[in-house]
Length: 519
Image (tube, rainbow, N blue to C red; front, side, top):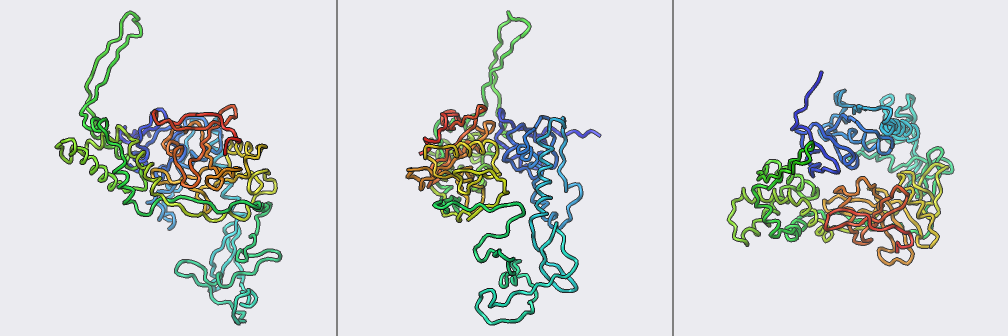
């Protein structure tokens, strides 16, 4: 059976022809199909997607995981059914159709890798559950998700044995109860005794290691607490700043008052070289519906701001500009003009938000870096990493950069660390849309005075160098550590520094990166 999808339900997005409405597509439930190449494969949430059709080859496993990840997200409407285990069978799976299975090792191996993570972790990662045995509740450590059939009674140590003040010497365990917050109160009061030679986490010592793993302690002299940024909890001042800062000059005003656009039609006869080109000037009316859709996408990009509040703020600013010029347009005409301005200059709001976010974002201390990390015994060693190992979550370009740092013999690099995303100890930078991003590396540079000597470095793929996300990242500035260094690794292995060209609104390769110039 063949099903035809109406053209109005199909959207497309490529790096050469971006339509600036990806966020709108993700939220617009009238869209059923999204056609893309690479630009959407990385960093795009599509929780409504259940089916992936791949017409191109994909041999890189990490890239395959990113692509498959588009259809593994759970839509918020389905999350309750997932938790209640009432989700229909057909919605429990994502479906991938391959045009050339032999050339899709990246996608097929991605599935194998995801499955191995799930199955292997279930063997080595213990977790607990409350089990009722013969009418009595008890806590059991499960194996492969299975509880034990026989009762495993737990007798807590006496208060004196745990070092807690008190004289309770009863050996009868109290009944296990869940507090209103879901915490096992009995286990907090009476932690189980640690195995011989091990300590539970309360004593501040290392926890049990997974089989085959080794603990790598942090080196001495490393600064463990850094500075991270977050968006302000209240956005009123930020909106006022955007209203004052956004550039609405005569060029912008004139663009908003256009009713049509001049198009040049060129006709060439490719079979008759003697015929010249026929040129025709056409006045084409602008589509209000399409303009409104593009303007909505610009407003949705500012995630930290309420769309309606941002819209009203911009309307008020545009109204003032019209009043100063003596224009007597109606509210509907001003709204239509704002849509046309946002569609014509989609970066206006982003540039204003970028400047204002730098003024109003908050800086606070991170949690301390962990005392140690856990890796397999065969983990690759590092001379300058704070734990003495190469982190295993690095992609190829990041790993090559880590090797470049380790090879520094100039004394420029004192140590480096992987700045993991969204961890309590991570260094985050607030971007214009309110999202935070976490540069890949933190490097302690000798004799650098700014930011306690720490330089942040972000490694970018050349194929996404000019995505909206990358354009924001290259100019984002941390209040403590300054603007991170953005690098791209070329095919010959050389790292190039990326700079933002304000005239073209594009990122460009600027110069060769050298470790000794980090300071």
